[in-house]
Image 1 (cartoon, rainbow, N blue to C red):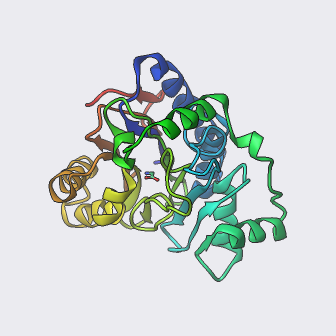
Image 2: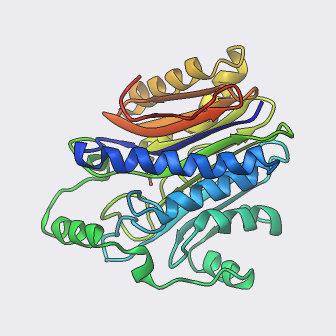
Amino acid sequence: MISLIVHGGAWDIPDDVVKAHCNGVRKALSIGWKVLTSGGTAEEAVERTIMYLEDDPTFDAGRGSFVNAIGEIELDASIMNGTSYRAGAVAAVQNIRHPISLVRLIMNNSEHIFLAGDGAARFAKEHGINQCRSEELLVGRELERWKELQKKKGFLTKDAFHKKGPGDTVGAVALDSYGTIVAGTSTGGTPKKYPGRVGDSPLIGCGTYADSRIGGVSSTGWGESIIRVVLAKTVIDIMENNGNLPHEAALKGIDILHSKVDGLGGVIVLNKDGVPAVAFNTPRMARAYRTSEMNECLVGIEPV
Ligand code: GLY
């Protein structure tokens, strides 16, 4: 069994961008699927899948990311290999086109797991990833949004995930033919976030977790709530104790997010056998998945 599941964010995705979100996750999935079917590793599939989503300006990751309160773009990302239990993460890094490639490099070429800010950019440079210009990440839509939000008093991070507020984040979980599960997540965070604000996406256990003996998870949504229930690892723990049932675990994880901290968000899950599941409590969540038992991928955006 090989398997791949992808998400492009859980929020109140407006009707006029539904198509772009569905097309984006479909295309991203097809890229990762090609890697897996040609014998590539789950690490490579997750990296290539998320690189595509970081390039697609539809999504809040890489190019197209939200702008923070002082007009800068700060990116968060993480990756975890569920066989080696190695992980890589960056927070508040600037001018990096593909944070997912940087976290994979940290995972495999550093004794550390998590690098922040200038140190992450320095590591990138030392390992051949050059900083890009800010204009490569900034799109007109987000510049306009930033200008509008500057006029708005009282805008809260939580508002980005409902009330037609914008909120994205991208992620992928893959099971390769060698039995390894890898999960990864990448984001520009939330609009008008305080400089240095770090969400759930780069935090191992919150935004991303993988354990090839149990499964893998990537989260999306209101980071401040996801962090407080350690969402990705919570779903993994539930799955470890429920007979490896991914759908039940995903639903229970979102139930905990809602009931304990009034949280908003979603998760994509693979269990150890590559069975996919998704759950969210935002109005919509863009996702796509495929397993070797399916002839084509399944794309969705509405609640199941
Ligand atoms: N889930 C993305 C963030 O809150 O930064």
